[in-house]
Length: 195
Image 1: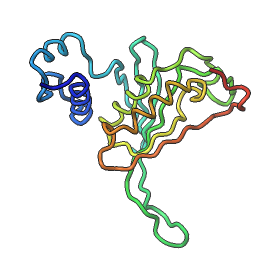
Image 2 (image 1 turned 90 degrees about the vertical axis):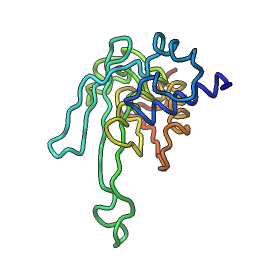
Image 3 (image 1 turned 135 degrees about the vertical axis):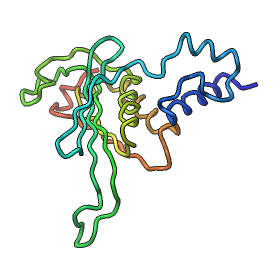
Image 4 (image 1 turned 120 degrees about the vertical axis):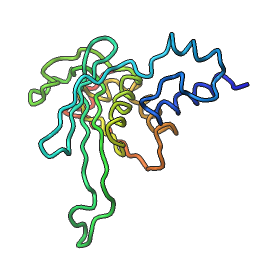
């Protein structure tokens, strides 16, 4: 008999690795779990509403509708790390993708150079909302790096950002590649960060 926690880990791991799979396709769960999953479970609570590709195909802007109807943007940036030179020699690495995620809908920092800053704060994202941006992006291309430089001030939503990072560095997102994370504090000084 499989334990509840082991079943949850199995379900999450399978759905992340097989992103078009339905819960009924997850092997080795108790029979009673399948009908419960079909009636009460969604693999994501958000929806990818649109994708906009740059003319050279290296950048993809994602518009993601949250379960409350609000929307955030995430951006996939693909690049070849081996292009160019470093310290007189070839650069190390190869093709990889970085995801820029949002931590809030809007922002209360009021930076006039930033469209998000001028719209005011509409709400904080949950850790799940943040993680689902990675789930949607991974369905397009494998993500290696994550930067918190999208909509919102990450440190004004500290607990959700911290929980999202803990989830993102968990084994369900580690597909044999080292991932890197960066939190950018946009325009605020520490005394302007709240929460």
